[in-house]
Image (cartoon, rainbow, N blue to C red; front, top):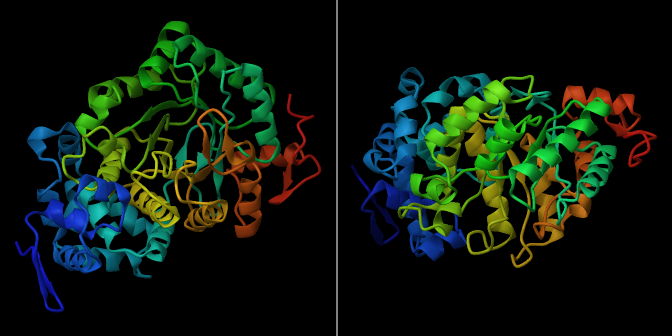
Length: 454
């Protein structure tokens, strides 16, 4: 296999497809920290030239972590749809990019081959795309799912209402949730990051949120983002309404061990939700990811953070989730240093997840020690909404007082909907109209008022 290229008067030789992947990646501080990034822009171009000519079959045959060493590699390989794979295996990565972007290639055509795409294939073609390419292709790859409401329909943009409280004060959580609902937020999920990771606290918050949504007939989902084992105990031993079960994922078996999970444990959790969960629809799981998580636990196996992020989505699709989102700037500037890197990663993750057939949202965010500002954050949320990202976060004034980072606000979601002519989920839009909060996509007389939300 040819893994060398000549650019101008300089020759480049790469020793493996994994090295080509790393050197072809857009600049990321995490890859530089790992010592695997391209040493120059010219070397990056050379790696992309090599990558563009590799057949997808070669990508499948050379996963970044060997089959014998990693259960996620085995999961992807053993569950790959052979018929779908046969339709694309002879394409080069460059030809695959052209096919995805062609005006003759429909979303239905992409969905038909998605079960035959490995995460490494998705990462490979992603590396050859510009930001606008990622938006165009991501918009084509619609993924529609259902829990208590329907997510991912064309022309819709939803939000997670994140009314966290630094001491898990239930009344504080509920007051903030009411405020977010009054701005039309929360149709994807009302999801709380708990300060106390215990079954009792998880159950208490879930019961309070269920009372809120039941009393007001709100067509959405509730979730408390404690560790999956904590949620399982709250569901099975304490007993509580649970619409979605949550867990953070990594792109390697070793990374998932650092999270305290495995394929077997997630299989058990998914089966428990099928039997005990309170969701009406078939999609009951919620996952979060983020570039750099494997490197932070020394579980990256010398692979770049983009391809490891894609492997998270290969893991997630086993469970047919309702929600998946990349918390794109949360891990810190050690992995994504500034606004351009965070923006690029958000568009990459959204595209790769939807290409692999899972619903994708994004926490467009940054930590306070990253080199990013409010204007850049607003640019990213507009780009994601234009690419038909399924949902974004919504927080009080965009400032999470419990997790200490900057994200999208309750006010941003209706602003984006008006700007880009987006609507909430159909069920939630009907509820908003009934309450006078929104009418025909425009804020109504009860917009921003909580009196009618008990």
